[in-house]
Structure formats: structure tokens, C-alpha cells
Length: 218
Image (cartoon, rainbow, N blue to C red):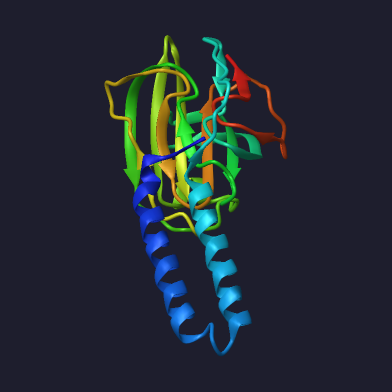
């Protein structure tokens, strides 16, 4: 397991806060109220370990396949439905949405190899990630990857806690399946828009792993 580069600053700040609070606790509380001092140590250590684990990148055997769409994120499948996309396709698409809790790995990966033909950031609200309107009203970043004659849109969506979306893709880039697409800090969701009629390989409520679980077959 490694730590994602996006976490270095957050972990450094959390470590400084942990050290500062426990130094104060040691000098001003431990003598008169040792139990309180121990509680502060345990709680702040737990929070520090949570921050570190949030930015983890576990060692994982990736799944590859030209005809396969691989899950771009860890989490739980919360939506599989036909929608009308008004951002890029201006037509019907099959949407599969993955909700990421704060405990999930939060690196996002390319579901297919191909050329990036669209990449756009949208300001927006911070509705909870499972809200039906979060796909169109929340802060989000959409990218479209073209593989041969098929285009797939991946939408990183901020939630009530996630207020920073990082995306590494720009139009014209050639990307490979399972390489990093971006990162969302502290819980959110990712939508994948597929051609109508695509064979979906997951079910509502299923827990999936980014870079490993086959989302659909083209």
C-alpha cells in the first residue's frame, strides 16, 4: 500500500494538529486528569489514522480488456438507469453511479483506454451524493474518453463533504485503462454514462473496486 500524492499536505497538517493537541494535553491536563489526556490521545490518533487511510492506494491486481468497462472508483452501485444527458451527448445514455463513502479508496481510474475528447469542470451545489439531482446540480468534473467509435463519459461529483475534485485529463490526451483519472477528497460519487443497450455487469447495491470490477461489456 502507498499514500496518494494528493494526501501529503492533508496528512502533514493532521500530524501537526495531532502533535500540538497532545503536547498541550501532556503539559496542562495529564497531571490533573490523566484519563482525559488519554482520551484526547486515542481520539486524535484515530482521526490521524483515518486521514492517512483515506489517501491509501492498496496494491491491487488490475483487470484489463478492450471490450470491458472497468469500474473507475471503489464504492457501492446506487444507480443503474437510462437518462437523457444534456451536457455532452444530448441524448439518451445508460447511467451507472458509484457512491464512495469516506472509508473507500478515493483515487479514480480510467474505465477504458482511448483519447480524451472532452474535459470540463462545473461549479455547483454540495447536495448529498445520493441525491437524484447531484449528478446535474453539484460541483462536478466530466470527461469523455473515446475508444474507437464508442464514447464514455465519466463524471466526478462532489458531495456534502467532498469539496475538492481533482482531475488530471485534458482533451487530446491518450490514456490507458486503469491509469489515474483523478481524485475526490472525502466522500462522493462517480457516474459513468454508457451507450444505451450496453451490457451492465453490476447490480444495485453491489460493492465494487476501482480498476478491478468489470462494470460493463461493450
